[in-house]
Image 1 (cartoon, rainbow, N blue to C red):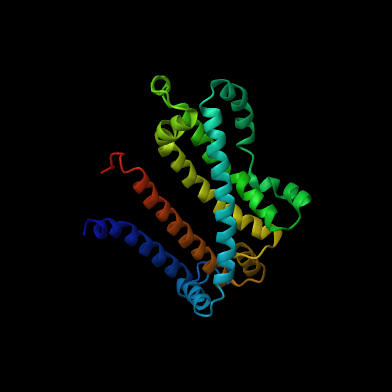
Image 2: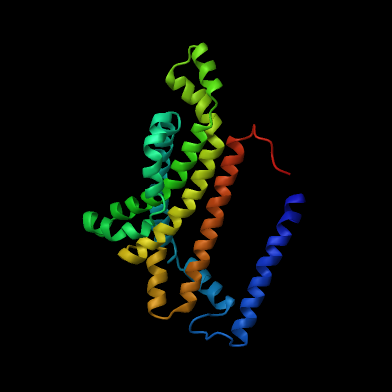
Amino acid sequence: MKRLLNLLPPLAFAGALLLIWHVATDMRLVSPVFLPTPARALGDLAARFADGAIWEPLGATVQRMVLGWFLASMAGIALGAAIGLTPLARDLLEPTLEFLRPLPASAIIPVAILFLGLSESMAVSVIAFGSIWPVLMSSIFGFGAVRVRLQEVSALLGLSRTEFLTRIAIPSAMPDILAGMRSGLAVSLILAVVTEMQASLPGLGRDIFLAQRSFRSGELYAGLIMLGLLGVLINHGLQIAENRLLRWRPQRS
């Protein structure tokens, strides 16, 4: 019952936005060429589900997003552990990382196309490059925050480097790692759509771009709604996984 009550405010806010959208289109405050009615957008989305046209582009987008995010997460955690637990590495690499981190990943798409062509490997590489930074920086912070006393205790207990990582360092850094992975997943979804638009790869991004070019506003907004729903579902799934992995952490009221 408490969960249902907590859902009422966000559902009411979403309903209010739909009402404003409906009123704006009904009063022709915006041309229907550019802004369809909510019923038309949702109807186009339902039609794509009904005839199965949504599944292929949705699957392609999710596959690129998940693969790029997974590679970025593995690389970010490994590099974050190596840098965060080594003060010398932090001192040497942090200026370079701070220089590279603000670079927009979409800006390297032309370079990636030049080297890799209009291929799946190009899209995954761009997604991995863009989504590695939240994971990497969070992992560096998390591993760097492991107290020196814990390292001394592990040495007194005769723990090997691997045992120290698996029993002490990784559990201590896990909250920061998971926060970075959640941020990285949001970035990977954005970049999956951008690469599909720019490289004309099959997926939701290309469908949205083609709908915009041919003034099919209903299909365009249906694609945007689908992307929003996908982001909500993925974030909710990661939140459930985070709560299970961090059961020991006090829950916020």
